[in-house]
Length: 247
Image: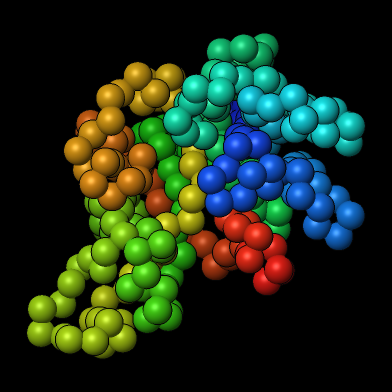
């Protein structure tokens, strides 16, 4: 992979409060807290100059400092990881060009995914970037818990939806749609240019965002372009105690 001549920081937002799984960043996976596993995977990235955990909870802060990680305390009022990343950038020293928002509940994230996302910013025209992965399973396609991303010929996001888009009117079964179109699952890791990150956190919630409960639609609705790189990897997110049992 071509090295990027820019300074990139990886930020891992981690909240203790969670409706479905309170305290999940601290849950042990084979003896290590989940947040430590995410941190260690991010540190393996060849493109990140720095990795920082952003939290609003002293217990998580203590845990991260305990395993020697970098951590910054942030407000408990943030509604998204994007907002938390923006606060970190304002607080820390260092002139970073790009910020990578790494999900704190993906202990098996591949460093290659992070590097692929970073590579999007080789183009100076890229403001925001994310990942997509080809969907091969009909159940995943129709699930509202699986956000889909629709991509144009320039590898930019046209729209994100929990619905099956495009919908083939003449094909009644979802599995038949695969014969006519390639569908992509959205992999929820984001990259932002530093100045763009500051701007998008000042935007008000948009109607599309509220309808789909997907914050990236706010950016599209306000005219920002989101580059999409296609990955073959997909790590397992831990959203509930049941997910923990699966892994």
